[in-house]
Length: 83
Image (tube, rainbow, N blue to C red; front, side, top):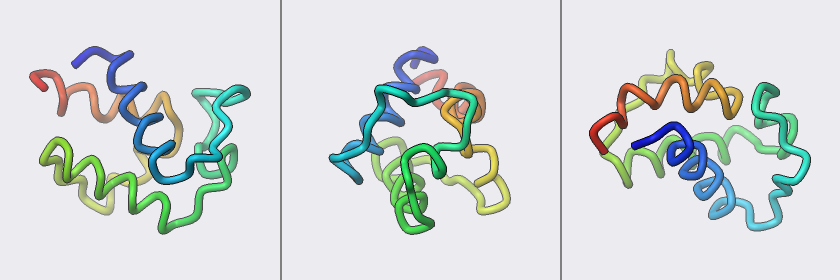
């Protein structure tokens, strides 16, 4: 999976969770929670959706790696290389 495909995947998951999410002003290096007003349950939904769609087990101690769109792509890139 390419880095752009991973970015699209994350945005698609967020849109499934919050269909009112506004990506027009989204900055890829700023925390997603702050920009999209995601709460902790929304964040867990993202992690669970990654598990469901791609069989990824993301340990809780790695959750900070998913803070920004850029960090999500950096973290998931090696895990989804062959997806």
